[in-house]
Image (tube, rainbow, N blue to C red; front, side, top):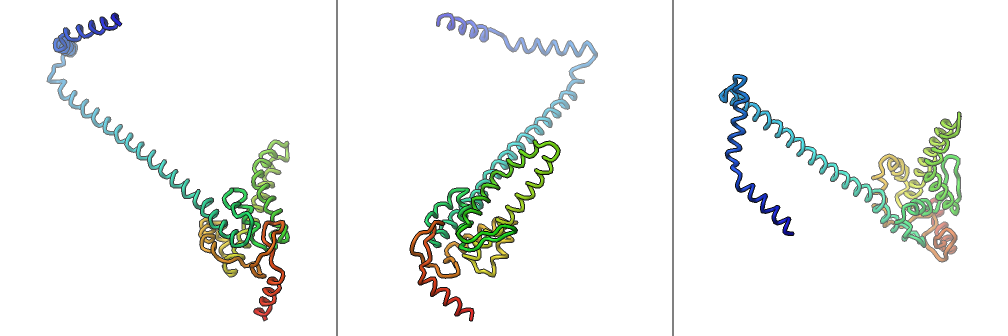
Length: 271
C-alpha cells in the first residue's frame, strides 16, 4: 500500500512540475526548423494545413454517415425480422390453431387441443372432414383419413432426409433423388389441396370450396382468413350434426335415428 502511494505521489509531482507549455513550444520549434531547412515557411504551411483540415473533416463526416447508415440498416433489419417472425407465427400457427380448435369443438371431436400442436394440427385438418379422401392414386374412406394424415406427415417430415441419402448411391443416386423430390412435391401439393378442399366443403359454402382451396395453395394467408371466417359455422357432414357415442376416429358418432331423418330430409330437398 505504501509503495503504491509513493508511486502515485511521484507521478503527481512529475506531472505538476513539468512545464507543458515549454514542451509544446519546443515541439513547434522543431517542426518549424524542419520545414525551414527545406525552404518552407509557416505562411506556406497555412493553406496546406487548412486543406488537410478540410479533408479530415470531410472524411470524418463520411465515416459518421456510413456509421449512422449501418446502424439504421441494422435496426431496420432487426425490426423487419421481428415483424416477419410475428406475422409468420400468427399466420402459420396461432390463428389457424384458434380456428381449427373451434371447428373441432363444433364437430364434436374429442381432442380439439390437437390444433395447438404443430404436427397434430395437420392431423386435425385431415380428420375433421367426414368425407372420402380421394386425390391422384390415393383413396381412403372416412374412417381411414387418419392413416392418410399420418403417412402425409411422416413422408413430408422425412422426405428431405431420404432425398439426401439417395445422393450417396452411386450412378443412379442423383436421379433417384430428383424423382423422390418430384414425388414428394406432387404428394404434398395434392394432399394439401384435398385436405383444404374437404375442410371448406364441411364448413364453408360448397360452391366456394374449389376456389378457396386452390388459391390457398399459392397464398396461405387466404387459407388462414377463410378458417377464421368459417370457424363458427356448424359443420355439414351430409347427414346432420348430432352425436351420441365415441368412435375410433375420436368423433361422437351420428345418432342413427337422427341420421336417417337427416338423410330422408336431404332426399326430399333434392326431389
